[in-house]
Image 1 (spheres, one colour):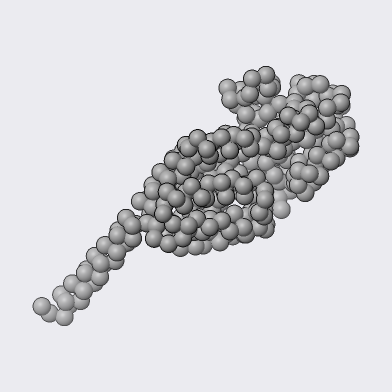
Image 2 (cartoon, rainbow, N blue to C red; image 1 turned 120 degrees about the vertical axis):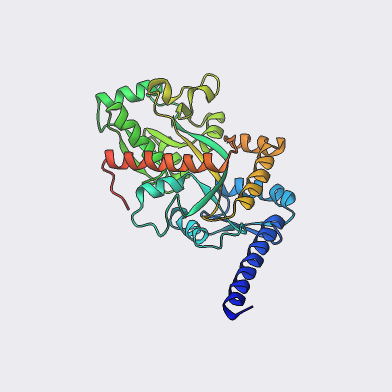
Length: 323
């Protein structure tokens, strides 16, 4: 064997060994703890769901699943770490729907919000809710819409911050209805609730997970939910009753770096779906005001891309300044 043939044989053998090693590694996945990064502090709703799922997922995978809170920049710090991590399935992102609003609102993200991730599965979805204080003179959702159309600029709605799903849905509603209500942002749901109950704002837009317990305690009165009409609770009005196209559900799910091998993604998807399908997990997610929902990698990717496109259109239509 001459030197050239020998060199070609060595290269070919090396490539075969590498491919075999990768295939074995994927087949044996996982063999070490998995990091699950979350871009928000401990104790929040997304953190509670992440920790709820981490334990049964670890049992199914046979390794620890460690939740790491990397709060900051609206979740972008954690997302950036995961986007730039090795695509081997050992660094995952627990990602909320704020990822899509960030993509619409933020200038110069250090990652592509869709292409730099492998979308594994959603785990839960939950609509937003529009609510008022119990003694509000606003009697219903149609009444609110009529008021903001007839008396533009008189009424206010609050959210947990500029560029959040609550803010952008409010702007979407104003665009579709032809009304005009002033957006009053706060840092966190507690401040929004305080201002609503004090009568300093008229309507609060928050997640159903946050609003449903308050409504059960009769601290607030729900006007409508942003869920599809077919999925709303009996007797609950929906925004879609008045504007059929205005449907929005927030989501939570798992993502990995782009390029994560399909075999690993399929394994993670299979185990996540099994965890979400368990009665115990379903009951706890439902108790939080959310709907358990797992799906395919492609379904999750399409949902993310659709939300980014929709929110970007709202930002453009309403001339909202990007940050």
